[in-house]
Image (cartoon, rainbow, N blue to C red; front, side, top):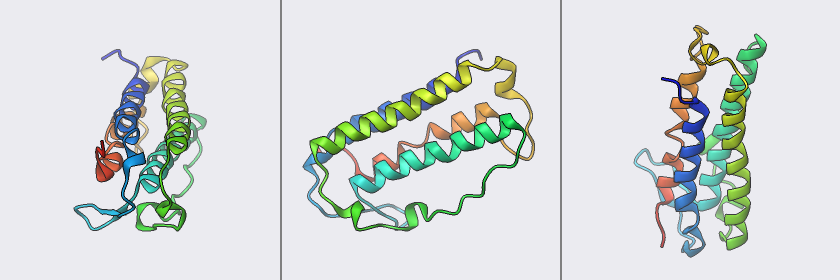
Length: 149
């Protein structure tokens, strides 16, 4: 396969953003996922961004040949007061800017590498392709809020 795996990440971001644009209609009631985690529009955007940042940092550490930084944030187990705020059209624009840039960073980072690096064995870590493929599921967070149009 010769497609830049970073493109998969950018596509997942775009799938998420198709839902994010509907969220100014949010009624202020948090949604509960099948595994009993609470989600709101702000929390879903935060989790998408955090997930991208986590794995971008992992990619950079793997390429630098250094250990990855342990994941010590509360992730989706924590719902903050800010997560409960109304979600406005301005928040949509901010999410579009933030998430699109993060997705594009994956495209550019992977494009800067020899494609052989994408599948290089990095045991015990995933390959760079596996990281990108894992991120195709990041729109799960957006699905927890859903289409509010």
